[in-house]
Amino acid sequence: MTGSVFDTLWASLPIPALIIDGDDRICEVNPSAETFLNSSTKHLKNAPVWDRLYVNAPLEEAVIRVRRDEAPLFVNTVDVGSGERRPKLCNIQISTLADQPGFVLILLEPREIADRMGRAMQTKTAAKSAIGMAEMLAHEIKNPLAGITGAAQLLSMSLSGDDIELTDLIVTETRRVVKLLEQVEQFGNLRPPARKPVNLHDVLDRALKSAAVGFAAHMRIVDSYDPSLPPTFADSDQLLQVFQNLLRNAAQASGGQDGTITVRTFYEMSLRVERPDGSRGAVPLQVEIVDDGPGLPPDLASEVFEPFVSGRENGTGLGLALVSKIIAEHDGWIAVDSVPGRTVFRISLPVAPKDSIPQDTPKSGD
Image (cartoon, rainbow, N blue to C red; front, side, top):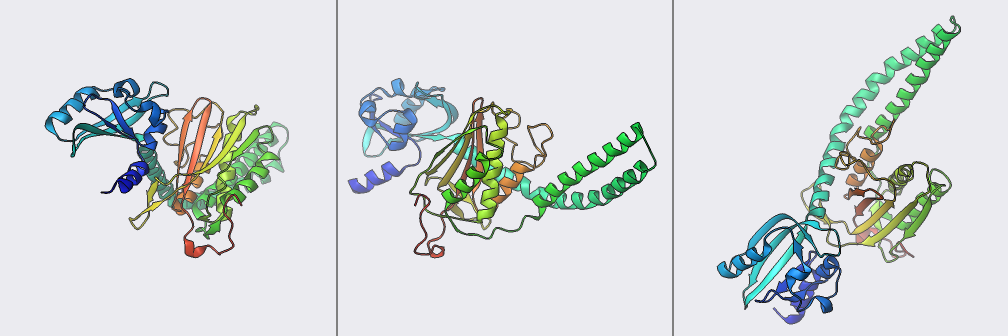
């Protein structure tokens, strides 16, 4: 393999990689490792690896074993950090270099992406499994509710005082349940997306304008767009529904207080999802909607996209399930990362096929 090809592959690795010499000093780091360790190659080279890499496991012993046995070793699910950032849960692969005795390659695979992908697949399945139930329940319950409402209205015509208040309560509550069932029917009957090349930033701008004059009027909204993003392949109306739902959640997280919503777009080529036909497709177009609210309750964070799960009083638990369903039908995925003071909903979408893009279609930042 020529040096130029090796350099290209080394720089393209989507996970942090380090090469250490026989004295456990860092010889090489790839760009992903620079980001992970929050330091440049210049400052990392020749530094003792255990001064720069903090691992919650006896990794020094593991490296000794790899050198001695000349066999790779895998260490799973350990905290790895640089001393400057909060540790991340990682899987670690350690191997010798065939043509350089004593030198060792260390690959760090953050579990964050794998775990979020797993959660995305679970929520996609959960959303689909709820569709049939949603349609059946909505249909079966709405008919008797109409009868209850009519009966209460007839009774109120011959009653007075406190009795009328009770019948009014019956009518009000049944109407509220009917509205809930209409949301359930929307969840079950959402039409398949009419997909075409879509400028992500156009859709985001429409959602932000609506939020700024409505439910998020009390919030500060900041956008940070990557103007080079190519079009995605989506139904713009359904995508607008997704963004408005997530922006509304971010605004409600503030509890009516002033806060900041940040919308960020960027390109990340390393992410892939499994399509219904079993193939895997890239989802490099990233949209993040970030709020500075109190965060999701820890017991809900892993289930927030499942139907009928809600952290808000009187919440239906259908909004995020519908968002998950729409994104899944666009061959994308959605995940959430939440700690007190920062909740990030991240959507990953595919690039529109080249043969679907008219020659004059602008990029997202044009």
